[in-house]
Image 1: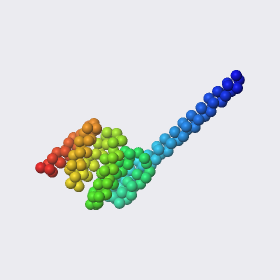
Image 2: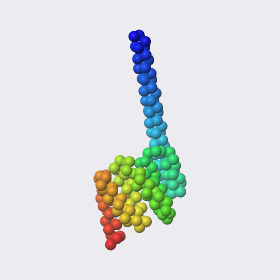
Image 3: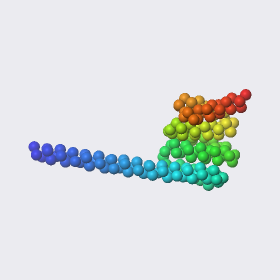
Image 4: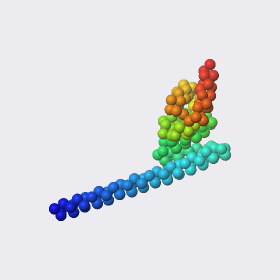
Length: 167
């Protein structure tokens, strides 16, 4: 009988030790992801600053680095918008298209305020490339996802622009 008590107690403490180890690994993993996201957000901020300073080549390099430093789809989508806008401005439509598609695939994980802004810039990119159908589809999709209030009127202006362009 004493053997069963000792065995049950040993199993109990073994289970607790296992749970503590798992919890430690989980929290350690979260801290790594948090650090990665902070680094990616820092790179994103620096890239945005370089764009404003008129240094798109340096910004493009940082935007590319963001994708290598995080697994957060929202942060990746923000970097892709930056890449798309730069590629669009220099006439590299193939790479801009790749960036716009990446934004579409990744922005659904963002909070509505960020997502709506990303969609706005992506729709502008599609319109600039003459891809009004893609732009309209994205506006319709965002409208169905409950966009942020500050972006609704801007998205509707883009919709009106598309109607104007198509006659």
